[in-house]
Length: 107
Image (cartoon, rainbow, N blue to C red; front, side, top):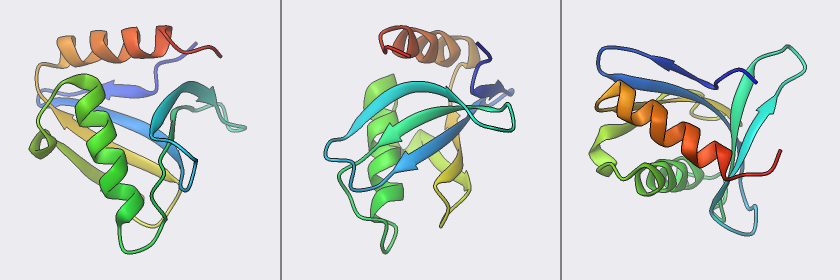
């Protein structure tokens, strides 16, 4: 399965697909889209209004990866379910943390 993130000197950029009002804040693993791209499936309780869901996604990723919220930011997809999220830090450590997080999730 392809990784849903790209490495950079600053950290990683993660492709996510968000389900707002998903009943709980959780990461549901990796999904392959119809165009073949891989995305991390994220569900949040927040509604998709006024940036609530975006804030919830950033908080969830920061908490799940053990990084400060200030190191996680939205690159693109402000009003879309498909988003690119940048996470600053050691790319190797972040990639490993993401792999472990996804390995714990059923496909």
